[in-house]
Length: 276
Length: 325
Image (cartoon, rainbow over all chains, first blue to last red; front, side, top):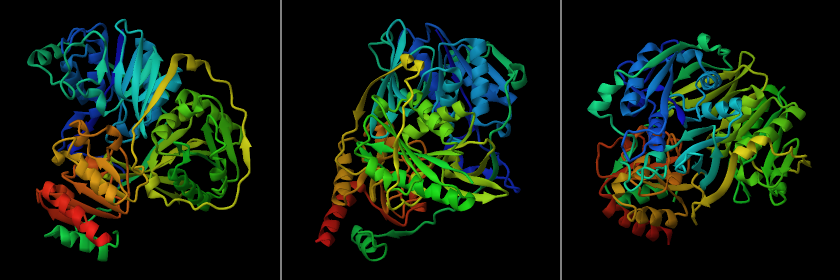
């Protein structure tokens, strides 16, 4: 079984309040911030490894995990991070964020799917910079594949013939069973200790969150192949459908008052804010 | 002129207020470029919702009714919406940014070859085009986007648009639902597990009480629930509290969880991570209770109390009970 996982690099999401807008309002810059794999994509890599692993944390996969990204040459570093976690190889499609929209990303992925013929594509449910949450659904439609979005839990039979996915939706959880090939987008809880059950790596729970790379993993990652391609190589239609014409800083909320007692709080809520 | 098709949000047999907010958005679009709006609802049986939908001032209400539509599979819904869009020559499709809207509309956009903007919070008209403002980077940047395709697809953030007040009665048309496409052989709906709650819907509640890692355990969330119940409010949580297993993900407020904007928001035992603030900063009044006076949550709250929540919450309950009398 082959799984393609997408990974976008994003400016350190824990410091997203430090991004800056250029003087002409046409660019967001993140100077001084570390680049990291988009957290949801890192969960995607972890989910792919857990689906294929033959024992909890064994690193022995019953198939191949390929990490795919679109970005500048430097994203090689974040791909290596994913390879150090245990993915087998990477593909870097050179591209500039400003010249992409979700549909171009989906079209690019569709071309890669044609080339790689995976059984499953796993994507993070959204990139935490653009916050769009579109590409995986668009990809599924372009390919004519089923989509299981916002997955908080997946279970696979031992023979990996299908996936039963619990989706995080408004008001509860929806359970679907998808046949391969399929597109999966993952939500936060996929990386809880029991987020993935492949009925092989049983008996022990995973650790919370995506795994840390071991020293051995980091050494091995240095030798793993990363293919480099361009959008033109793949023949991707690069017509933008959605353009961001300007960026602005949202109005900040100002800090209010610190009160000494709960009694004072209740009085303020009643008399001043008039919300009680 | 541009005619807008609104996808209604129906949950537990109820037309959600988010639908009314989407109607307000559509009236704003019409104020810029003219045109009308219609509403499409999809479900197994919509006879119970037809009247409420017809009261939303639409040119027309379309009902797509067939077995299995309540399951809201994107593979099933997208071709139905596509048919209504094509038959009615609509130039815009908009839905609340509900989990269904987020799941289905990008698939629809790809079917129609249409560009899409997610979680729009504002619409304006400049240089002959509609401009949509949408939060990015966990709400730290607003991007203004334009869509260059003949059909435009949008989800809007309902908290940023007033709910439209019901008026009049629109004509209702039951549409012929196209046959289930072949792809449904590849995906099977197994069931829906409802997050049981007797409290109001987080996205619609007038009061929200949220707890963070400071609660220290799932059991201690009882303190949060007690305050929510006293005020007839909903319970929320931070991602850290969800990660720690104190509470189900459905209660998560934040960039990647629920976006809320109640009249009164209590942030209890939570530091105010960017990710969380992105989901609640549009609340009218924010109250923070945290024992760490340096916690960033105090930078966005109207009223702060620096105190141990395990002491402050019971006191607060008593005090509110006193004034309620």
